Length: 316
Ligand code: SAM
Ligand code: SF4
Image 1 (cartoon, helix red, strand yellow):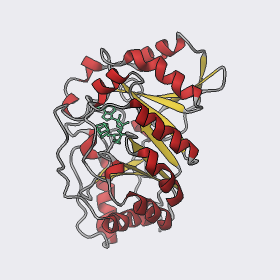
Image 2: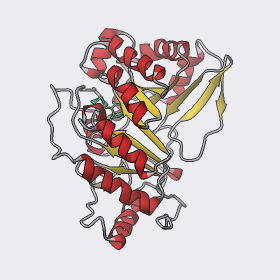
Image 3: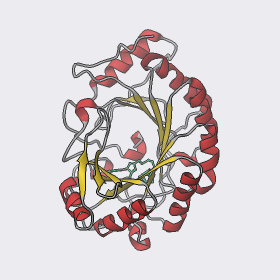
Image 4: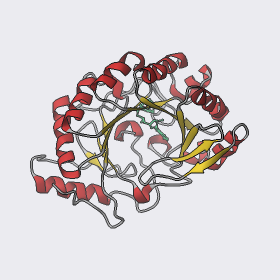
């Protein structure tokens, strides 16, 4: 079946980000409200329903990648089965984004089920600052998870959100840790999502400031950006790579190829849209095509504008 869903900018969906649940065992300052444990608000979706929806979307879009996220995807009790199911649908690349807290035991089973890539969020090496960012303790537990993922043969990246006035002192320690373990690290500019929708500037630490900080210790040159990539990348003189996801300074909307499926089974064409699109009959080819076209129209032309939905809700 041809992928006919394409917009005026030539954008089409190639990557599906699936939010397995909108529940989390962390409480990151930039993501949730920062008050206690997050309540479960999702009605949840069974693995069977989820896999059926992914299969329908793949039929329409010939997806190249499915990335599992949330909330915290490792809390989803049928995670390994879902990975195996996605592989049998015939999706080429399966990836996951996780806070790493439950990773040490899950790394090998996920790899065996067909997972290839894992992005682990780690915002600080210092325990107090890690707590300030996530409201959880135990950096070592995340590190153990990262090392277990490497050992299992997964391709690992680290994601770190830098917030001005909170964890900018952690940029170099995070880079040192990543490079010492031959891992690519990516820094994220804070995004205007959820409770930060109208006040991201307060914490904004720009791509330029990140580059200046890293340049105080490392020499590097820019690498050409692949179309559709969320990050800009640089390579150090000793061959290590780091990236910056600069939603604000260098938005990548113009060739964005991502579609989101949330834990209620609704689709979103853009992080900046808080309007979920419901597909009533997934077997109705015409309806699915129309709803995908509607989702594509949600994409911003050039610039990310943010949303009152948190990343936890929409699926980061
Ligand atoms: N719980 C998993 C995790 O933290 O990796 C997956 C979901 S989380 C919403 C996905 C990514 O979104 C994480 O790397 C997180 O740091 C990032 N994120 C969440 N809210 C953000 C915000 N307001 N600005 C920038 N990044 C954000
Ligand atoms: Fe949870 Fe990830 Fe949001 Fe942190 S960023 S609260 S780990 S969903």
